[in-house]
Amino acid sequence: MAEPNFFNRTLWIGDNLSVLRGINSECVDLVCLDPPFNSQRLYNAPLGSGAAGAQFDDTWTMDGMKAEWTELQGAADPALYHTVIGASLSAGDSMQAYLVFMTLRLVEIWRVLKPTGSLYLHCDPHASHYLKQLCDCIFGTNCFRNEIVWKRTSTKSLGTRRYARDSDRIFYYTKSPRDFVWNQQYRPHDPDYVRKHYRHDDNDGLGPWRVDNLSGGKAGGASAYLPFKGALPPKNRAWAPPQRDKFPAAAAARLPENYEQLDALAKCEALDAAGLIYWSRNGVPSHKSYLSTKPGNPASDIITHIPVVAGSERTGWPTQKPLALYEHFIAASSNPDDLVLDPFCGCATTMVAAERLGRQWAGIDIDEVAIGITQKRLQEESDAAVHNVDLEGFRGGLPSLHLPPSLPLRTDPDRPTRSPRIREIRWAELGEGERRPCPGCCRNKYYDDFDLDHITPRAKGGIDADENLQLLCSSCNRIKGGHLTMAELRQRLLTDKRHQLQAESIP
Ligand SMILES: C[S@@+](CC[C@H](N)C(=O)[O-])C[C@H]1O[C@@H](n2cnc3c(N)ncnc32)[C@H](O)[C@@H]1O
Image 1 (cartoon, helix red, strand yellow):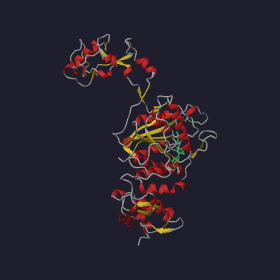
Image 2 (cartoon, protein in one colour):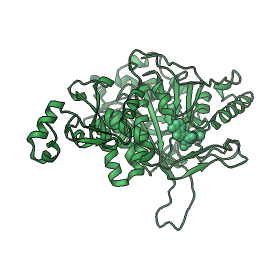
Image 3 (tube, helix red, strand yellow):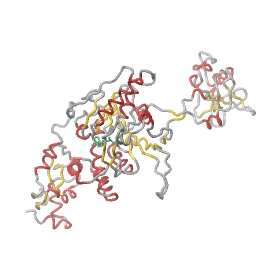
Image 4 (tube, helix red, strand yellow):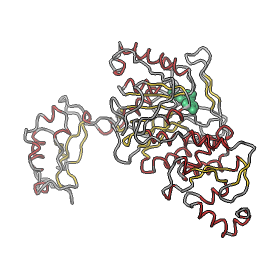
């Protein structure tokens, strides 16, 4: 794992693809991104708001995406290419352009994540189904953890002849299927559930409790099958008295010091002596399970308790997300001092959330209005921290922001020896009006007819470097696919009748 090649609290202004490409591999613990959603809208911050001037365009065409599309065709995993093509067939050019944009960035995001890192990708049903497929290709289906639904509004829009669209999606992936940071989050118990299940209270200061099974499937030695004060464990089960730490401290103090060393039956007797066993009217023993030992309901993949940004939290930035939502994700998937990156940081919601929780962070946004608003929000948090013990990260005063004047330069050992720009330059070598023979079928082709191809396919050990790249016409590239060498391509063109026309120019 490499060290980050930038400071904590860095904000880059510029296109995140170039910035991401300059970031060392495997140096980021958590990436939260809230990119454009392909909503076909132009977002403007309201005049007079703190974010006035901020604007971003969420409309997409392939015209602006030519170089990136070429790159994706030439360099990426064929599964990504086919996912994008499939989406363009069903949803058109605009979706294709959006997904080309997202694919190249997600590939880089995966690269900069540590092997134990996690990703939260915020989107909505405009493109969520395609984005999930891309993430499945990049991260692997076994690294998909959740599709989180955030109920963002309670707007009751009428007249659209469909159900009101009230929710966003957030995809949670980890880079490893097993080894990743996970801090279980809890929500308060549902009062109805508590009322229904925790009906008992001994008024001894331990609070409400419910009855819980004293028997389990695993045998705890021979004594686990013996009668306990005349009661036998149910058929095929054995006594399974809980550990001491399953009780509130004041109840555990009533148990003998050597409780953990006792056999199963002696434990049941010790629990009974401590008043922690409940006997039903027909003589079946259960143990008392106290509400105070339960941390709450495990946080769910449906979030309904976090409302949209309102009041003083609102900066005016279009599509601003609530701090509470990002605090929730950062708390679950990172530890204090971990590095959190947001490549579409907008008005710095992720950064403020990370700072509050004592994490390191970096952000990227293409709009320079982000600088002022990030500084302002950090200043406001720092002022508030003077009076608020919860704002841990801001306790040391206003954190200083790093605004690098240029792109980061990778310093990690697996950095590429040549810049990815070389590909674009090579592409540019062929002017728009020129024709040149395709190295496969030898027919003269125009700029638009060529794709970038790996001469020796990557599946056969070909490297992803400039010397192994060539321009090949799209028809030959389709036949060559990800596995034929140039000799095999020629052979295929000459022997397969379907390619007769194409093979005519081969000398
Ligand atoms: C949905 S908003 C993010 C809002 C953010 N989560 C917040 O709470 O403020 C998307 C952001 O992506 C930025 N953006 C769009 N294209 C970008 C690019 N190529 N590189 C960096 N930022 C980009 C926009 O300027 C916009 O601020």
